[in-house]
Amino acid sequence: MKAYVKSKISNGLGEVEFYHPKSNSLPYSLLEQLSFEIKQLGDDDNVKCILLKSGGSKAFCAGASFDELLSIENELQGKQFFLGFAKVISAMRQAPKLVVTSVQGKVVGGGIGLVCASDYVIAHESASIKLSELSIGIGPFVIAPVVQRKLGLAHFTNMCLNPKKWKTSEWALDKGIYSEIYSQMDDLNLRLSQLINEYVNYSSETIFKIKSMFWEGFESIEKEMEKRAEQSGQLVLSDFTKKILKSLQSKQ
Image 1 (tube, rainbow, N blue to C red):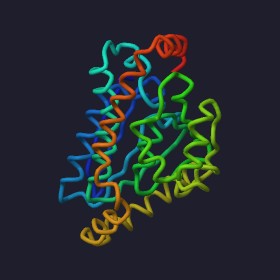
Image 2 (cartoon, helix red, strand yellow):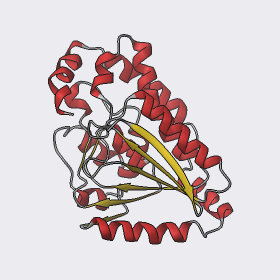
Image 3 (cartoon, rainbow, N blue to C red):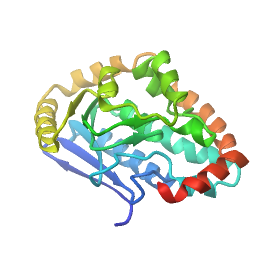
């Protein structure tokens, strides 16, 4: 199946789904489509709540596409690629509706940024998380503000400096990345439906004001992410990173 981003609106819910055959990794084209669809749903008066999810039954998101990282030839291209994650995070933050995310499997790197930019996250118990960037010679620079917002500096540091260690869904729940976890997808989907039915019937004005409160102090996050995208764009060109990515390319 080919990669895609698709969205639909039904009964006040704006649903956006992304998919990539390589563990739902994200090339720039998908990041662009994802940010566009989220912004469109955020601007649509018929939408009261946004649901973000990925296709397939395994990984929720493997982060940046290794194929695309290897194709980057200069710092400008590198910055542009990592700004793709910044655009999605910004679209999620700026949407005047709650963004609920359903996580069916493991989450790596930039995918954790999308999860942490969500307002409420329901995950399967198999959905372990890992910030693997250091192990491939880059860092979670662009997503750092939103991940640290949820984890705090101490736990964010722990994740950054253990790039090969998976954190369990229970750990993610305890630290506030996940809001709820379930052992069965049927139970997860039932709870998701219940929650969405509640959210689409709440006051849109109140939801907007509450969400604005959640993000107080992060009004300049876009400038910060742009600056950090430059750092990532430089590091991804290193011989060390290229060598590691080539060895891992077939495994993503």
